[in-house]
Length: 388
Image 1 (tube, rainbow, N blue to C red):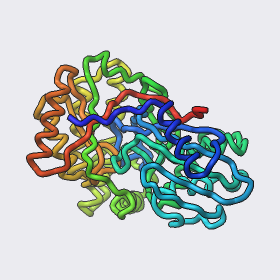
Image 2: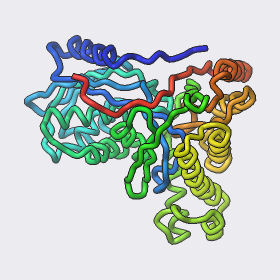
Image 3: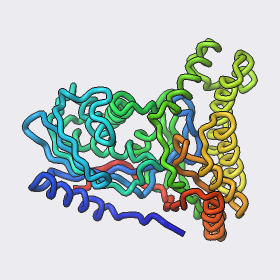
Image 4: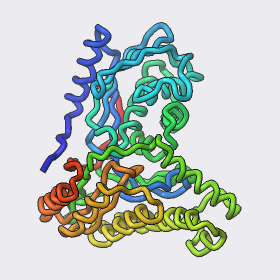
């Protein structure tokens, strides 16, 4: 069984600082760290004004940053060994492309607050393309660095908004704000119930071990892609449904009312997922509030996956294989997590069946000639912070 080791924050920070010294010479002004995340339940509804229930992972991104006295930005990453250098005034939609867009986009979004040039070195343990929010971890760690280095003194909500703009407008990924919110607001040992309609949050204790359960995060190693038009197409479908229903959100609508005003089968399916998923999040939060994290929560997770697979059509053979195998081997429930079209799945498993479930997931992938999956530790971690 292939487990992805957790890299201690000290080692992560040292790696970023070493890369910085090698690329730019001298020491950085500091190192900032932000976590990846996994979403327990509530998928593809953050941009629909829904409720989501993510928590931060112990896999994180560190950025070593040094302030410059000009408007030049230089970036380097251990993930690609590629660099990008440009002027702040050159940053705009589509420029730069690739991973540098997530860094440069934050500087672009905060220019009105007085940010200047910087040198940035990135070192991360969040697997890229896994649906575990490596992009938001990068954006939020860097946003916090800019806030400190240029003495912006901005509220974290403004840093979250800047990070979302970087992803949406510069990188061109039409994501909602769930990932940035959890990166900036997570508390260790808790999931975050985020209301995407009004931005309110509530910390919910997440003690899976205490209930005899464990959450397996399964990176299928089939990279997901949010900028290929599929994610945006789902958002566009909801916009059309809103117009036909004469509403601005599906929040608060019962399923019969929501679909009764629609004719197109695809729109009905998309709306059915959103409305039913919001209900599942509400039920999951209620279960966790009373310390229940077994079969009832697992059933909600499985229902979520079926809805994402059939109504929202964002699953993949790799994700379906992992979910079906986990359930066959005795998991309480399982579902894809993240944007879909590849990426990761999660399974809620009785503690004594972790090995058996993981073995079956690996065997299933091999049987269908799919990439061998990687398993990650899912202990709720804390939010973005300055390491030194």
